[in-house]
Image (cartoon, rainbow, N blue to C red; front, side):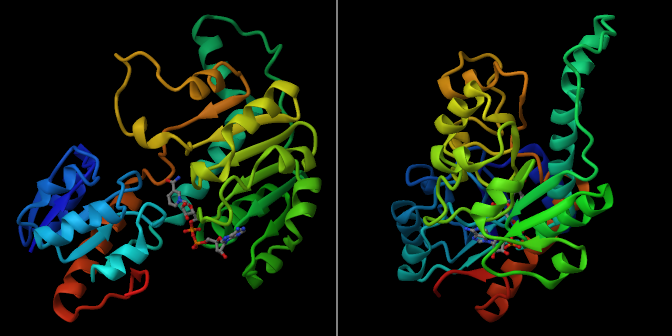
Length: 330
Ligand code: NAI
């Protein structure tokens, strides 16, 4: 089988080549997948895409015309795919539903703790022989109320860590999990979660219904000075509203591993270019904002799992025409 990878990075090549054992023909393209770049996949049986590739109807149609038979996402989220168009075109879409949820959960905690204890600022200060503590005052996470929006694989892994910290856990999810109650967590309404939480962490997928779940109205319902952490998808937060809330002090801390406009920025070295995203540039002026470039998943274990499951998904599709990790309407 020939598999064409889009948005391919050096580490994709490293992990996929190591597990492929030269069984399949793997072609790696730096280009992000869209209707224009899709033509690169001429001759491919399958296309392997990542979070910021744009698998809209136009792109999927080009792929189908080229003879591509399968779409394999090397990620869990599938909001970047027009699933209705894929079904119409007869293109099965598979994904990696869970690759070390703990990796993302641990990164979530890293963001919470760094922002709270100002480790990012302390690191720079100490390197300049400034050992003053003024400005580095944090809060003890123990006994604080943390609200989790979404308690699937990653939300639950985060809840388990937070339980160890001695936090009071509130959660909102249309499909509650009994494990959360076993951790002494409590399901509440979204409004109650907003009103009571000292820290709010987002762990739900991005859907048309929850686009800008965090907006001016919901930010106003939160505790003044709340910490907001998003390791899920950028579109869950109205970034302009978050910026306004930071300026007024309503939002006390903001940690982002994902950003609404990340598709033209993340996973690239833009250090030689002029900044083009005014909103992101303004966010980065705040000492209480911490941004990482979608690295929650980025551990050795998770990349191994992603490569293993992606290759297995495609082999299953080739052998049987179906796959356990298929998403969408086909
Ligand atoms: P999952 O499918 O196991 O869990 C998602 C949970 O969210 C489900 O329990 C679902 O009922 C709930 N949910 C759906 N809509 C909701 C809403 N409007 N409000 C509250 N809860 C809602 O997914 P998993 O594996 O936990 O991943 C969550 C998200 O994390 C993914 O959709 C993806 O966007 C993001 N992610 C980020 C990564 C990173 O590197 N930063 C890596 C992997 C995933």
